[in-house]
Image 1: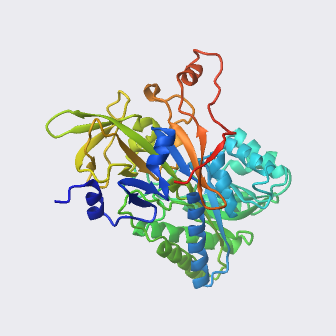
Image 2: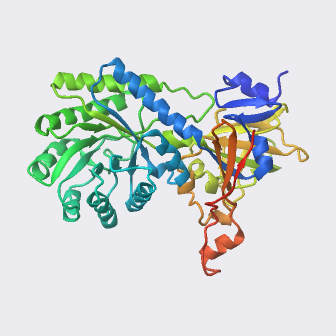
Length: 482
């Protein structure tokens, strides 16, 4: 019988895959020997593989470029990164190598934009699209950016008061966009998104507050739905409603020339993941062009805002299985040396799935188990795996350490988990490693942050005077060939 863990994976999925392969019973991810990484830095461990950020950006650019060439689409394409997915400097530095633009969500985002400008990473030609409900500080920061000459800063209007608030602080004329409040899927508890302005109200809003306002010029219509870009009737119906609004506005607003179709490209969450990105992009461009031709208006420049798609597949986490608890005849709990609630909070909050694979012992026999975290919380577990909610891993042996990896965890987990702050049950945040490739293509690793220590948490809690982050900004780079 084929009872080895590697046999299970080979028989269940098309394996190996582009980013995953096994060598001598150990898992490699994008050419990274994960066991060597674990031996060098220990576990629990989080890592970011920076080249994957650029890889995904350029994949999307190619899909849109091909679709526009195929359909003779006369507008341009602009890729924006949603900073809320991961605000870390190493993420922005990598993403901005690829001639992209930025979407912001809050006041402090603008401070990051200004820091990036001072470093020469972006300039006044970089589009900065400011979404979200804008409180006073956000308004002030957007105004400061525009007043300092950032001509391509475009606040996206979310409610009826924002134009007046912005006008009071911005000197001279400025460009804006309007966000459409899309209708949600029928399964949602509410009908319409809380963000933006309703479909039926946008043209009247333009006529009442923008058309005769000498200070404001409408440049962009913004469309986004929570479920993301999917090939289903709901998505296409919402997109066509958006296009009807765009063409109606365009006929009375010559300055309108851009359509932001938001984001929502999914990332790989299973070895069985199957998503036809190229088809979706091709059909979106086709539908936009056909609608504009029917209504006899020029096609818009296309903007997208990809957050998870940009950074998600760059991240990973490695844990060690500490112990196995046999709780009854059927349930075996493998206890990891960290917490899912604190290090992968989406597994707990929204039952999100990530790719889960053993890092070592692929030649060993396997067993069905449950995975538990260290906190004293009944919800600190993970079981949303691709095998019908069951998890299969190499059999636990006390004398043979087992390491497991979660992959494509790069979006939102640090922000939602409160990086550098308090963790549930004071379980420390893991060490975080940055992985890159040098000019010769060799892998390099750099320590970004140490695992939290007791004194870090005591400072936050007030037991010591000051809190000093443990981030190693000037860490020494170590070149390693994995």
